Image 1 (cartoon, helix red, strand yellow):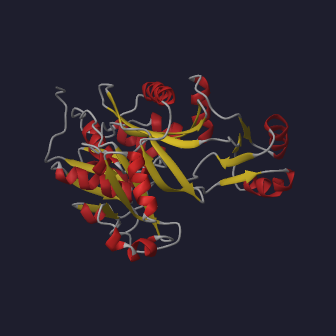
Image 2 (cartoon, rainbow, N blue to C red):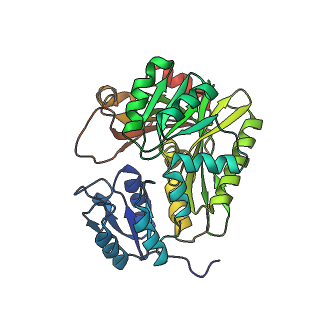
Length: 373
């Protein structure tokens, strides 16, 4: 048993007050921890469960210093944490996750370079720094392709699909507004999947079942678990995850997204935190991605993962919330989660539903017959 574990009664700081921070806070609360949340929005979802909120921007160095005086360790709910402040917290011994994963996952160029270095399969790509690079990328990779900003994109933001040279103008505008882009072959995949796992400070990894994700307008719509992939593909995905986790010396919960085409896999993106596609773990597993995360950063032993057998998670957005409200009496088997956000907007994640059963396919059929998915 580690001697430097952080037990109940101590204080955890969370940078970011959205839904992931809220679910971390929920878990930390029932494990007996105090909480301080740093977020610029007063009464944000995570702050509603915290002992204290520091209302400040994430790169406010004075606010980060204040946070450091109030807590025993710090974690974060998203990867776009200011690196200067993160390094300060690491130097103070308050950031068990370190800054390596943050630095890599903040930048798609660094992500792709890491995957290439580790000989992991990725879609062909080129880094674009000027219009000439864009033309060369088209010659090398062709169409269709996806152009992404190297920094700051999420939920489809900062992405553009190119199907022909007629789309060049939009790509050039995107380049003019960003220092670098990544030009990537658009993979014709059968399924998009993700693996969520947690790695302890001692290097022990516990994997959750691989999830299959369906997107609508670049935003996760629903997650089906376990993913409908072969055992050999699942094994290859776990092997790739272990390679990445070891190289980055991951601590805490981490997610990797993959494209699956037949028996081939392509790593897509990394997330150094709990992940939307892992929300099913709250009810469908004996331990959630959030509890494992808290256990890892507090240097407590991880719990071996057990799974009920089948789960479907549906994101509730401003777009579909009313539809499910009208079906509330049909949701007797759904676990309801609402995030406490003050405004309902299109494309904004408001909550999620999770359906759990012993058999995935039977669950999918039942939900489809009732028009619930």
